[in-house]
Image (cartoon, rainbow, N blue to C red; front, side, top):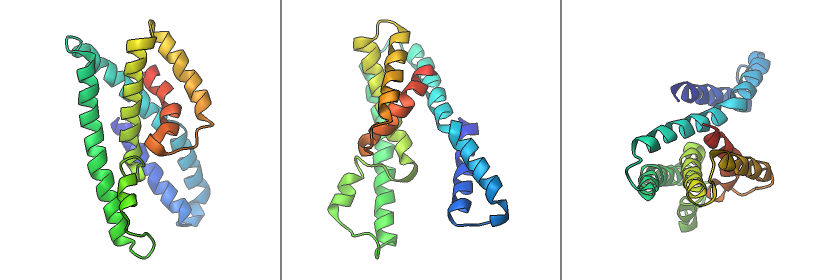
Length: 178
């Protein structure tokens, strides 16, 4: 995961350089670096998360599965809610002229992630869906993987950012592969 996080940082720096036309003599290099990193770093991050999640689930098999979901919800959604709300408040405070300070902006911060916080909400959604799938629908491991592949194909047509449904559809198969 550390390697992927470093790639995220490098990718965001390259993206910033590209958007602001910085180091224009390195434009081709920055674009190649950006495209290369973004082609695999998030699928790899979700695959690693799925792998680690399976190890944790096996270590706690004696506990009820719903406790795992409850723990995941607390450990992922609470930080998401705190940091995403602080980010939205900070954005509203520092960008007074461009963004209206309205209650609905804070309300939507519960459902619509800002910046990098989409990962936490997406991982939570994937864990819940994966748990439901394995508990109620999948009798075999490959069944969940096939269903995740079908959802990933359908995910191409999902255009909503609410609860990051589009990203859940895209990355669930990576999580299941892990």
